[in-house]
Length: 108
Image (cartoon, rainbow, N blue to C red; front, side):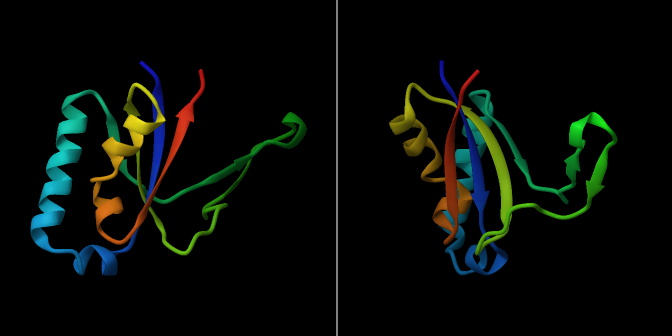
């Protein structure tokens, strides 16, 4: 079955202004996705890694990307196609709590 990488963007303010019932349903939905085999996690502190011309590793403790909302988490889900992946992720905490979720096909 095809897999999709999702990136959830959201902040505490959006989460807090969403009703607890909607948040709880979103977390229950994530738990169901995990039960079905999805890998879901909250974003920690990023580290940029470079190794130009394989001459030496350079790191920077900061995000490379910037967005209006911070990255909140990631998931790898299975779905029959993009339409099903969108449907599955549409009730995730970031999607319902005034954030955004990107869905990327994982091409192997």
